[in-house]
Length: 390
Ligand SMILES: *Cc1c(COP(=O)(O)O)cnc(C)c1O
Image (cartoon, rainbow, N blue to C red; front, side):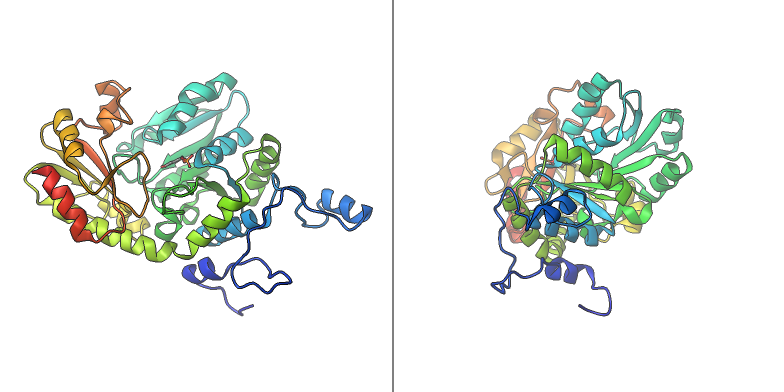
């Protein structure tokens, strides 16, 4: 062991399980549902948690532990638990910590399925959610009630790429004794660490940039040890655990996270700069463009601008659809954070069930295009977008 703490990139590469008897260099895959005990006393002590030993892979597994330990180091978190999907992480975090009658204050712009949880499912247990608009953070405190327990947000937001001030959210949560939960999926731990600004818990869909290659689903929640303990005890009974195989894939993915994100962001900034000068485009949203409405906040809390570029095509819904039809190389896909560049038109696809007023309330205009910029050569990405715009 080193006599000093390693930097982010080194932890991502060097955090590793103890080697087995085979002296492997790369962590092996532990495809086992359960573990064995030496004798009755070993088994008793392990179940009593007097020993830290794997019992059953719904509770823990060496591969998921390695993945979680890496994410904890990257986010500056005390503890964590890995889930089969990002939504399992969001749902089990909320369900473990909330009781009937509790209340959530959330940013209005959250991931679609998270929105459905707030609107359709949590009310079954009398848990209601109030929403503040992302461009009106000064109103947040007016939504807090005596039964409010959780303050919830994502930044950058999907799909409009607004930025919420993490320091402000952290201060409000502290003042009102709320649990601040941040979905850090769009930024990744390489770009921003919400715990530094007062977040109690950070959740991720590892399906996106953490895998980064469109292969596996995964999710993780990390943060305060006392809260993670509650989430762990709940989840070991409800059963949303990440599979060892996915954990093994995702732990390997983390080794290349920093270099992938650097390149994603370099490409995304170039695409954003190109679009800003394009006559068919009325506006571009990218956190590291000075024209972004929350540019200062982005510069304060983000190391890079991320890989998502949103822009507005002149002309509305039909022009947006025509743009998608003309795309040749980039993929039309619901995923994001892949090596392959993906373009989507939220108004005619993911958010088509909302009324125009509902869409506008979360900044989804008819001509909004969301791009997840990949790792192809940037000249080819720009060439494809340009030919589809003309
Ligand atoms: C995709 C996504 C999720 C859900 O993750 P899954 O792995 O698809 O379940 C949650 N939050 C954000 C911001 C996402 O982009």
